[in-house]
Image (cartoon, rainbow, N blue to C red; front, top):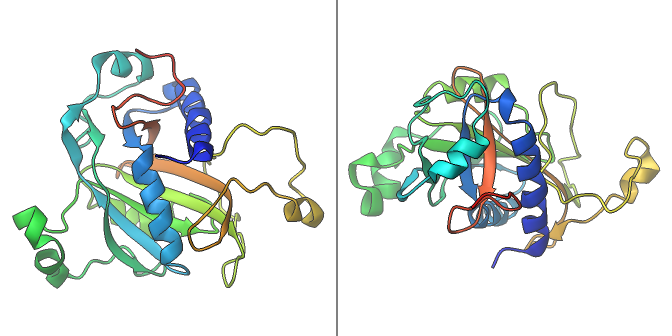
Length: 242
């Protein structure tokens, strides 16, 4: 069962995704219980980033009513592989620093995933990597890695404490998409003192406090891809869609 705070965050995120749909050329649908799994992996791998691969869940095509409700004015069909299906199970592929996490040695392809993926090995359709204590904005290395992606690339930024060698970093330009529950009160975030009182959304199994999440997706051409967070039946949390 997905943690209640993460369901609340997904609900808030989806409302923003629906409001912003005209700014995107396409969307993907990611099950929240996959996101919860990835968060656990991310904290177990600290201080490294992790790389996750996904394939479309062929047994769960996106409902036509959801497509109609969530497509923007400039929506494009068949922009990327797997566009018409909910994203399937996550696979932990690699871990490392920001310069090495995207690199998957060729010899891993047969050894890591041969038993359950056959000849496809580590060749996944969609990819995600984490930014520990850093905003979810693509770097130049992220953009380069995306050129080899058939589907979309996603970035999950995680703000947490204790920070260790990774103090929160947000000195990056780009469109940010917070994945947090609706605030119960307005807070000032600019001063050192207010950051000491930052809310705790949840706690990782490692004992780290989670203070904020960000999630984006983008296509290799550079366009942003909207994200909808769904339950196990493929229904977006918090949206009035049948």
